[in-house]
Amino acid sequence: MPTDAALQALLLHHEIEGFLLAEADLLDDRKYRDWLNLFTDDLVYWMPISRNVPPPDRDRARSDESLDASWFNEGLDTLTQRVNQIETDIHWSEEPPTRTTHMVSNVRILDVGDGDEIRTKCRFLVYCNRLQDEVDLFVGKRFDTLRRASGGWKISRREIHLDQSVLLAKSLTTFF
Amino acid sequence: MQDRNTTPAGNLVDAENGIVSREIFVDRDIFAREQEQIFARAWLMIGHESLIPEPDDYFVSRMGTDSVILTRNKQGEIFVFLNSCMHRGMKLCRYDQGSAPVFTCPYHGWSYSTDRKRVDRPGALVGVPRYQECYEGVLDRSEWGLVRCPKVVNYKGTIWASWDPDAPSLEDYLGDMRLYLDAALDHRDGREGGSIVLGTVQKWRVKCNWKFAPENFIGDLYHDISHRSADLSGIGPSGGKGRRDAQRPRLAIGFTDLGHGVLGDLPHTAEPELLPTHQDDPELVAYHQQMHDDRSRNLGNRKRVTMSVGTIFPNMSFHARQPRTIAVAHPISATEMEMWRYYLIDADAPPKVKDAAMRYYLRYSGPAGMTESDDMENWTYASEATAGHISRRHHYNYQLSLGQERPVEGLRGAVESGSYSEGNARIFYRRWGQFMDAAGWADMTPEAATPERVDAD
Image 1: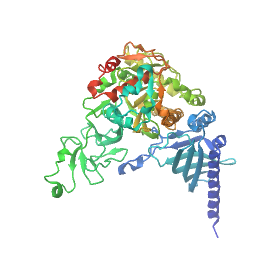
Image 2: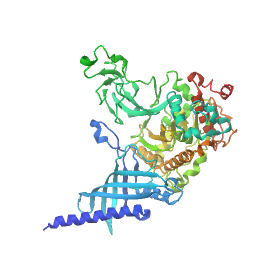
Image 3: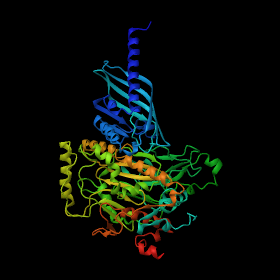
């Protein structure tokens, strides 16, 4: 028989995975306003740049969070501006829109803390197809911090580790 | 069909009438010729000294289609080498940057040093495995050092290199365009230099001809309409409307004989009033006011300019204010380039100022930039729609404000043609044609490159 603690962990994992999969649906359905509602006001949304560094510098294999360039280093304010831009319908790199499929897998809960703020890790595979033959594939790891809020969970921090170093896409107008 | 290898570029570019053949944006033979005629001759911006601050530091960059190593030796001198082992061509340095006292090839182990205490010629071959038993009396190690770029200059932190020993000095190459480059590189308080690269260089691939980038940045205010969605989203440094704080009126100013150009203002000797910037934060407002006051005092009545964006022929572009960055368009193929963006900041700016600048840079520029992402769309699909068999028979039109060029007082060889003008693009492609046709630098120096002389040929 599973212990009560193991059962609680299983239920939490199920709940968190369900939350992340539902989030992926919002993105692929382009329900961006609902998606923005999943984030806390103090959100940190950061995608560092992966770098090819020699052994002594392996701790610098990604750009820093502060005072360094990234692909994204956003708060809820600028993430909202990005949604606003898409909704103008004249943001030409997203018009015609990209067809996206967000795959989320390998979901793990890294740290439960006091139960109200948990750290998770997962893999993402985002397939983008646009116009006739524009194809981009973004694959990597994602570290999310989720905070318990009324009616479910909210994301307070998202760290996105893209496996590309030179970005092999002409633009990054997809959310992760 | 004409042989594109022998067709004079003059037949592809008619700068006087603002007409440019589409072939130069899609043709493989023309692309190959550009490598020899342009990228093996011109001064190219390849990095920044702040990326290699310590002895033995290196940063891997590109010159045309070649990979090069920018490195500093133990004595502090800066060198540029072809990033290819002399034995079997292996890419010697496959990290983006790091530190190495010697460069050792992973293939057969040949190694090279820049240390003046070890070698007379920096880049010399110092280590050859099994030398005594297999190479003694055969291999002359002094003949097999790394290929070293003959001309390298550190200009206010930016590193420039040219493969051509006959290239003019960087100073002559820049001409009075240097005043505008200074507007990006000099400290906000008016002191010379002082800017560094803020962290990692963004690199990304775009399926367009490399010339789309420098042409866009040389002064294409006409494409402002592309960025309407960024304006509507209000991404400027002060929040609210637009994508920048208020700026002074900008004119297309180009250097006819040199191929460079900017959107900027005419040279002046008094500091104009400070335009409000970073209005959301009193600390930032106070900092920028302080910089303005110091700048007015430090510059006194010296000649100065303000500008937003410009290009130094062939592929280095820069923004001097909002954002403050350098963009280099590296050629990959006729229809693909790799964009590199270096973000600039004053080394001694407070962390809060750097942070605000960085966040603004990232929402404006780069592949995720809310302004720049739409440029990539234009350049990519202009390239695609140009490459068709029938399409490439035709020409691009650069006649905006044709004939409105007026000389600029205080800038050698410069003309101004109003805010909305393709005058600078005409200058860029005129220079492109000169590079493509000239036998060498003797035919391309500013005196020899005047339109009259080319017509006479």
